[in-house]
Length: 592
Image 1 (cartoon, helix red, strand yellow):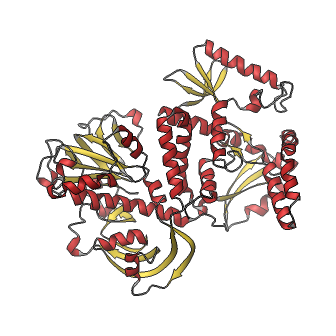
Image 2 (cartoon, rainbow, N blue to C red):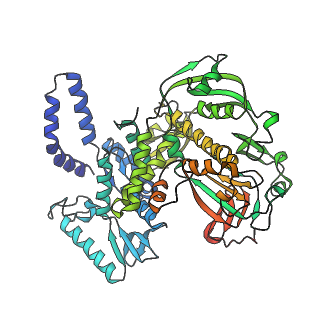
Image 3 (tube, rainbow, N blue to C red):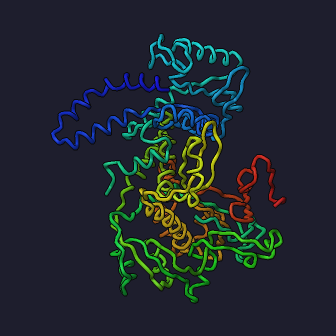
């Protein structure tokens, strides 16, 4: 490995000589030193490729690490996951899983698709003798073979697999396209991050042109011409709407930016929340007044985590669990104590008649939408991927980046650990660290110790992740109370289930427009596109299907059975059974 590193540096340094010259020409000595140090550190990072190395290879070689570390005592670069990304991109495109490390005869295939009898080979340049990257007579220091020999072995393997009836697809070209995609975002896929979340975070906070859920069952069963809506009209249709890129929509909204300011609660603070002059987070008690509880009865608007005990369960559920049952759940409630709300959600609560009291503290931020352009770029790349196969990979990568952005912001550093590889002489010293000691593992000529982190730098904007999750809840509340409940009389619909970004409900007509209140039909047609994707033309439908925050019709059918959170059934092709392998289930509505 050290020989590889030396050759890597000898090859790379001359290519960057002009940049060292530019740095040397700078007048400020501190700036010269800083930039030179940064460039040297970047050049010294050696990407190492390995398929599933984090899961398999590292665990195999871990017991020998003390010997190697004591011998070389040197930090090494990050490990790239480009192979995983490549396989994942293929799975996303195909819509099914690919069998990895498939043994075919005497060969080991990187990926295998049994439905099409296709073999996927990543074919990394270093171990397969890429002729564009290496001279044929160069010797691979790891295998001892010449690059030309490795290349010929790779070609023979592909030829033999093709003769055996397999369709072999190498991945060098796909990997190059992946690198080019991230390069277009001014990111080095190998050095700026070893995962989509890492690359996304780098992109989020360094792009120069920035401008600037619950899963609940409401009703267990509805079926066409069999059940009645709230005991009245017959059910005629089940509709299921799904919010496009709900979290990406939330990320594109106004975010708490700048330095936070702790504000002592003052008498008119709620008025300032209503008029928008106070933007940030407020901790308070909140409750639904008695006179509007009936209005909020079907979908209680206050979402909170609470402990559910045996006494809180229905008689049917009690029969399935033990008397000492306890579980923490996210529920909808009519009240909440000492809950932190973003002011945008709090404003909606106040507008709909909820009562706020006991404001314990408030935090003020600047109101900006720094990620709006990021959300637009994700949407545009996905639209391009829908219309052209050449942009398919870009669309899928931007989809992953869009999903990674908000979750990465709320990484829980408290769950991180410090890992130390030590020699035999340091065993007693480390095992006595009672306060932060978690455990250790015996290795060859040493030990691996795991400790709790005694301190960490909170370098992530956790307020962004918090804001995203809260605004996502706000959007689902708006869909129910400001759209469905506003345009449709409650005698004509009944909510059955919601699952983070989707809502399913029964109606008494054949379509949503059929049950709209007659005096609001004109307004509904005019403002429909504010809530739902357009379906007047195929072009508009495709465009709106990638617009964050719009709701699309995900399901239209005759039956729904909602047993519990994440456990529901619509038909043989669409059902959820959390914790149970779908492949082993043959469900029908009669069995449920």
